[in-house]
Length: 105
Image (cartoon, rainbow, N blue to C red):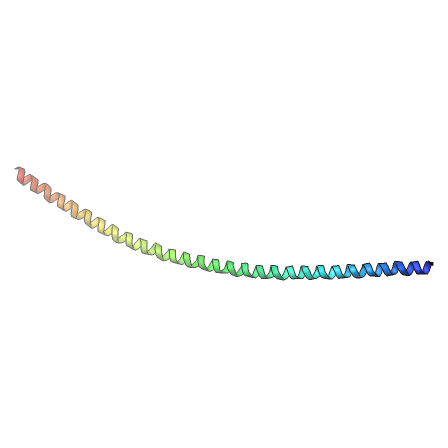
């Protein structure tokens, strides 16, 4: 084999290796781009889900604020009823005490 043939053979091998390497690089780039697309899709889904959760939390907070107001209203009403009952009970106790005094005297 002559020197020119050896050089041609080496160059052929180098070209073949370069083509294989280029094909692998293209395949790898394709896989990277595909994974990036999937990650972007996942991120979009997560972002949308997070917005939904934030919306629900806001609605819950609003609902809880309304619930707090309702609880306060019921508490005020019950407090007024308890105070009125307490006054009635005190008045009844006072009358019973007067009756006991009359009966015992």
